[in-house]
Image 1 (cartoon, each protein chain N blue to C red):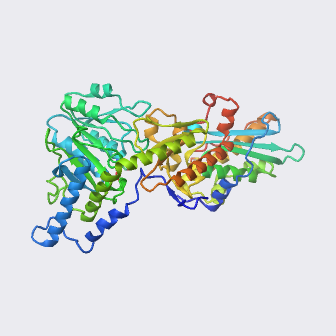
Image 2: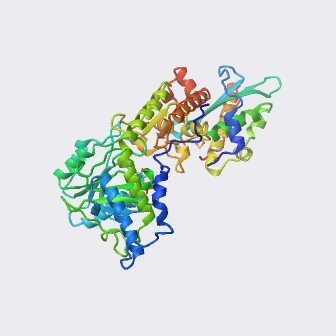
Image 3: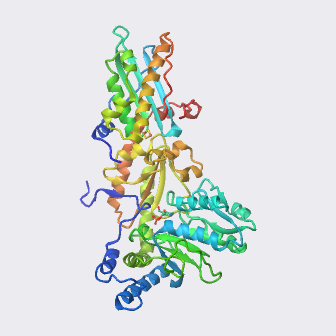
Length: 408
Length: 138
Ligand SMILES: Cc1ncc(COP(=O)(O)O)c(C=O)c1O
Ligand code: FES
């Protein structure tokens, strides 16, 4: 075993990232020593807090090429999804009631849209192509005179597939429809530029980019066009009236620092991670009947979603989850017993969805860890296939689809 | 969710993985589950015609660790039993032995179904009527 190998290995960075120690260091003074309320205008405690928030707002804005005034601090991406979609729906009710989104969005978007349908709104859920990308012609065709918002995520959390955001925003502009993107998995990982990308609203989250949990930001465009959202919580009117509540100063400071670090390190980090990810993928693809899910060209640099046919994901993870943390699209890991809806939306059969693993690399992933992972996954797949009746049938040339399975 | 030591043990060192000759009249084969559901279990018994005892049992399972452990345990329990004794194996015995949490009960149900299916296959092959099990709900 390599001396430098650190166990256990964390390859679930799409679920959450560890915090960068430099972020913690920046946050530290704002718990005990500089504890002021950023809204306290009459004393130095408040001023110190406000100054820290202003600075963080600049760090955040800079990363995405926005104006600091366009940044609304939130509790995370879920809140940002809710605030953007419900906020636009209510604010622009006089213009229309139709929203377009797609089937591979995060639940925070999909369930918000379902909520809107219950209150009388119309939602179109675009299907994705087998590579996970939406069909732009379908998107344009779905726009009606009632459409007020297009909500399409930037990079997918399960497959890493990156949508053609520039093309989507062009279509939105052409029809005078606002464009919101859930960029939780993309910001800090790949260049995201709200001007060049033509984004009107965008949510992202601290804990996916080496910052703290429980803090995030919603970008709301102020010029060309000026966008407003209806607040979803009543209160003191913080954040330009769009998001009330005493600001989470240490969290915001941490988010700011995380953005600054990503700004400085993203380019080299993305290169390093995509090289490691590709090596991991190639190392695993030597196994027979192994498939990468989603477009591999338009993909986040740190993500690979791979199906190992004829073995079940949870059983597979059990072979190494003492040492390697990652996640599977298999149902048995989820309470619902339904395999990943994202993979199913790509047209994968339930059997392949059940056989998938998601590898999410991160800032602290090492080459030694990748080597170890390749070996561990390969060995376990091989071992479990020897134990799999489906593998035996496949090897004997039995058509598994022709068998009458007792569905339950 | 953490697995019990017994599940881990069966998963790491599964007992009786393999294939019996399904063409033999004294071998019964049960294939249950479905790939779409994320679990397929094949369980086989071989009955010694003189003693009427199950002389060998093998399994192959596509599924989670609990499903693999349930089938491994089932094959161990089957060996040396008469067919009638084997019919009495209840999925809750497996749940208890392996300490399965509620979300994993269906893995044990699958093992019970596989035992019953294997026995039925054996019965039909030997000119005995098929037993109609009460339908288990997964
Ligand atoms: C694409 C996407 N949107 C939203 C969220 C929710 O983020 P948060 O945990 O900050 O609410 C996540 C995280 O799972 C995500 O990956
Ligand atoms: S086979 Fe599905 S949880 Fe065990």
